[in-house]
Each structure stands twice: as C-alpha cells, then as structure tokens.
Length: 164
Length: 68
Image (cartoon, rainbow over all chains, first blue to last red; front, side, top):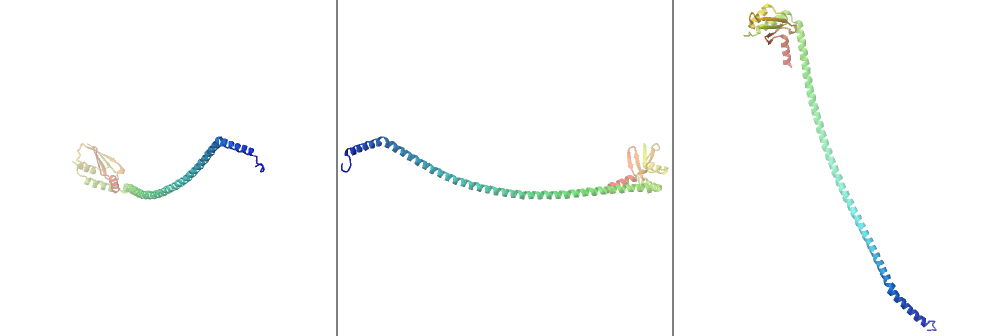
C-alpha cells in the first residue's frame, strides 16, 4: 500500500472524517434541506397547478365572454329586427292615419266649400231679392200715378171684409 | 174709438165713407188720415191698436220674404 503512495492512517482518518461528516450531514442538514427542497417542489407544483387553473379559468372566461358576446349579438339582432318591424308597422300606421286625416280634411274642405257656396248663394239671392224689392218699391213710388193709387185703394176697400 | 189710417195720399170723403162702413164705425168715432208716400198704395189701418196692413209696400216686403 505504501508503495502505491496510500497512507493507511490518513485513509482511515479520512474515512472516519467522511463517516462523521456523513452522519452529521444526514442528521442535521440533509433532512431540513430535503424538507426545504420538498416544500419548494410542492410550492412549485402548487404554482404550476395554480397557473394551470388560471389558464383554464382564463380559457373558460374567454369562452363565456364569447358566448356572452354571441348571445348579446343575437339579442341585439333580435331587438334590432323587432325595432325595425315596429318602425315599419308604425310607419305604415302613420301613413294610414295621414291618409285618413288628409281624406277627412279633403271631405271637410269640400263640405266647407259647399256650405260657403250655399251661404254665398243664399246671400246673393237675398241681395238680389232685396235689390229687386227696392227697385220695385222705387219704381212703383215713381210711376204709380194718383189714379192708379186710387184704383188700388178702391180694390183694397172693396176686398176689405166688413168688421163687426 | 180713434182710427188712424196711413195712406200714400189724402183719402177723399167717398173712400172714408166706405171705410167707415167696412169698419163699422160710429159717427162719434174719428178717423185720422196720415199721408206717407212710402206706403206706395193701399193703406195701413190702426184700429185702437189693432193694425190691418193693406199697403203695397208691405205686400212687396211679404213677397220678398216669400221668395227668400
């Protein structure tokens, strides 16, 4: 052994030294370190799991957002369609109402014109009759001679019934 | 009784006599004759508030009313 350059004593001392070191390391350092490592590993796994969960939740959220968007779009489309239909119906109703009103206005206007024309005709007739009466009155006053007046009075007296 | 006659000219006695007779007037009843040219012809008799309108003017007015 000596020829190989190995010192037995030193080797034994080193083995003992290593044994002591191993014992001390195992007893006081290896367990906490292993525990620490194990905790770290657990924490890492937990983190990964949480990241996975978050990713899943994010994906779910994205899916639900897309669903909500689609649903909203559908509802919006339905509402828009309904509004368009309502607007169309309202427009049609308004047109019908406007036609009715214009028809009523035309009928009323015609009636008014008829009434005014009748009134005008009545007024004109009245004026003509009044004017004719005035002309006749003036004419009779001017051209009825005394003899004619006497003749009229004679007839009036003749036809006057005797009062009792 | 007071009788008022409105005529276009002053009535003569003959006409007044006929009138008295027709209206059955007594001698004491007086006739007042008012001349109004607007009557045209005929007469309006007011017999104590009772009016008998026999004037040409009123006949024309009645004709106007009838036409209207």
